Image (spheres, rainbow, N blue to C red):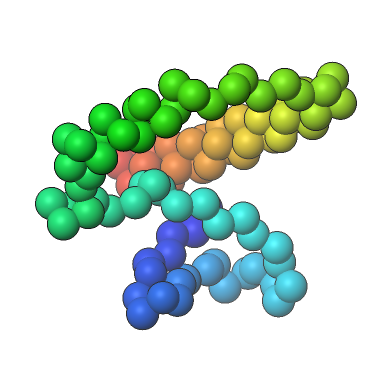
Amino acid sequence: MIKATVKGGRLEVEVPADWPDGTEVEVCPLATGIQNEAGMMSDEEIARTMAAMDHVEPMEITATEQAVWEAERARRTRCEKEQFAEHAESLREIWE
């Protein structure tokens, strides 16, 4: 696992020296967004949004789409478990 920081709309990343050029990585944000008072929705905006959501029809997906979604979910679960195991190992090494 690597960590990156957003600065000026770009990612600053440090990777292990043994990763060869061309290594593919997947980048996912740790937080879905930063919110402060200026970015918070007002009570009226929340009420309008909730009312609009009540009018949205349920989405139906095909068996093929369901299978693709489940496969992606399983892949992400495996990836998260691997990242957790790597992080746990690095913490264990620190405390030994």
